[in-house]
Image (cartoon, rainbow, N blue to C red; front, side):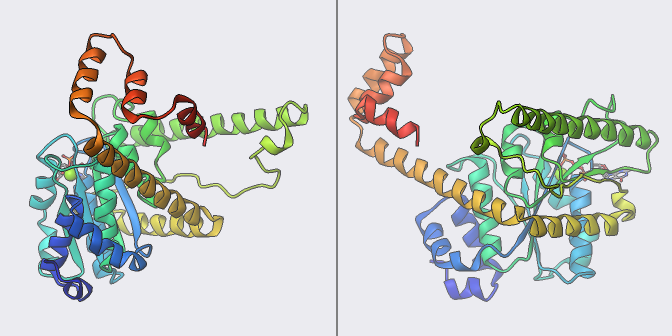
Length: 349
Ligand SMILES: Nc1nc2c(ncn2[C@@H]2O[C@H](COP(=O)(O)OP(=O)(O)OP(=O)(O)O)[C@@H](O)[C@H]2O)c(=O)[nH]1
Ligand SMILES: [Mg+2]
């Protein structure tokens, strides 16, 4: 039994057990998180992603150090690595400076187990973030490697996403994937002590300006169509008034020298203020809660269905599917006992 009082008092063992419980999606974890729900929604979440070896963990160390010692913020780190079993360890192992903070109750570092647990990685990360949020951590940093779909999903949990690049990873553009640039609120070129750093910065500037020109072109096109009366009024999300937009800044850092860390934190807080001013903060929060609701519901419905479905019918159906005697859609409809027209109606909701 995990004690709710101990969690509320910030007992680290109790918090640790809660984190495991929510990560494993256990009933106890769910019950506690339900009881703590009113305490969530207060933390500021920072996502840190980028190619392997760019210096994410080193930067996270410095962010933690800065926020803890200069701003007196309670901060938690969630290290997520869907592919390699090593990086989480590197985050915990390569922590020379973190010794300054050893025993500090205001810092909590957690590596996510990448295997053996139920549910999607993004959903489990969201649960761990909520648990930290509920237990009073004011800033939560999620560190993740790479540019796959799960990193993009995890990035959606963050209010501010840092994409970390470094010079000298082969071709300057090679490590920069268009998909990952789209999720960046701040671009960090770490290892600025190395030659060719300015090439990396220029490459990023070019990619960013191409991206924003494309967006502007799409908006102009939309306006043009509106002017021509091609688009109906009620189908026009683009507003006539100039809306404030966020241009991702490109910042240079040298993590081991602690260079550029103050500026990086300042940029994070500027982005936070922008989100609050523009109303995007509220929109993001709403979207996140709705996504959590949907994934919980889907998982719940699937579990319920799996418990109720006739096992023999399922196995026979899967055999028929594999030999292409029946389509996946037909099999799903048969096993759900949905009336086709009902399900068609539902999918349009
Ligand atoms: N020269 C230089 N080396 C750096 C800098 N930042 C980090 N490093 C070194 O680069 C290596 C990788 O740093 P990490 O912080 O582990 O990088 P990471 O992105 O977390 O790596 P993965 O988690 O494996 O993807 C380490 O040997 C760091 O000491 C920097 O600014 N300059
Ligand atoms: Mg790392």
